[in-house]
Length: 387
Ligand SMILES: NC(=O)c1ccc[n+]([C@@H]2O[C@H](COP(=O)([O-])OP(=O)(O)OC[C@H]3O[C@@H](n4cnc5c(N)ncnc54)[C@H](O)[C@@H]3O)[C@@H](O)[C@H]2O)c1
Ligand SMILES: O=C(O)[C@H](O)COP(=O)(O)O
Image 1 (cartoon, rainbow, N blue to C red):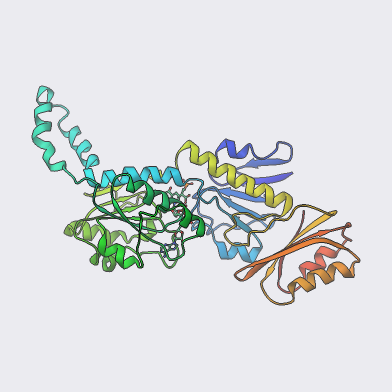
Image 2 (image 1 turned 135 degrees about the horizontal axis):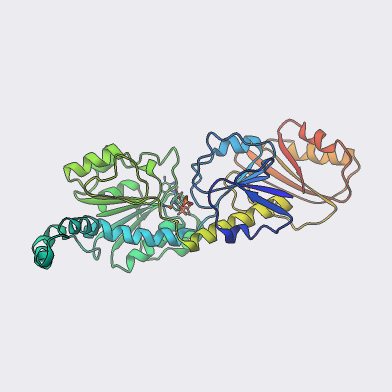
């Protein structure tokens, strides 16, 4: 029986992917084979030795200690694109909220709610202070052209915005999906200097952390509107609040609340609702559960963020999955261990990713006792699993 430990609320339609009688899932598990998580932080988590995989039902993996997982031989998965449409739709709302002052206007209405028949007149008299510009004809800069950024760039064209996109690592599939009418920015500086609206769609990494700060804001247009539906850490809150105070930034819309942002003028704070739709919660949970099943049952890897993608049709009697360092002589030592035990290899495949590599072997006969221990002791082998 495989045990899945749930560290966040996971959509039931994803949990239905796990066959009853073969899998159990719960918030507590004695010896979990895998973890399913959304935004809960695993940075302080003591991984049980039984854990072979972590599946993030979502996109961002900055809540997971990827390097530590790799060293423990734990495969980390995410669900690319599964919640992109939900985020895109909320970004559209964010664009409009950043321009049209709808939030403070609604708040103002509650101050005149006891004025009886005078309300309509007060509205017409007072609404002027909530006027805001249209999107049409304005320049939108999209930083990060992945699953979400491409969708945002494309839909903004339907508002007749002039769209600029920046992503030095853009994937081929994103390049196919983006509209030809999007202008290619060759540097992030070009986005900062050119655009009236800037929206962030990059992961939080050491490279992107704090990218919106006093220095970068100083290169932006006066009255720029900034949207952050990616991660709170991309923006230095104190710097953006100071820029709002000076009028340099007209509005900051963020999906990542913190105490200093809530209630501030010209800041719209949303409680991390980007992916909170039933559709995207189902998509993410289903994709994550399918990835886990494929890995736990067959050792096949799809959508891992720390190990290579690798799948092989099942053949032979026993399958071995070996996570090892990406250094010379590993494959030969793995195969030598099998040949020393007179085991014929029916099929095998290997792929590397950065410092790590993964070898899948289908053996034609049962493995003798002790073989796994012998293989596990090879220097550079991190984890050996039988499937
Ligand atoms: N608000 C939410 O609920 C919510 C939901 C989903 C994702 N997110 C956040 O949004 C991020 C993007 O999600 P996605 O699904 O589009 O991911 P993605 O991996 O499809 O796209 C990220 C893109 O950023 C690009 N990139 C990386 N570093 C860059 C840099 N320095 N400059 C420019 N581009 C860079 C990558 O090349 C990639 O194309 C996630 O990492 C996550 O942090 C938030
Ligand atoms: O990176 C993501 O996928 C989002 O931030 C969604 O997070 P959530 O699953 O906690 O809503």
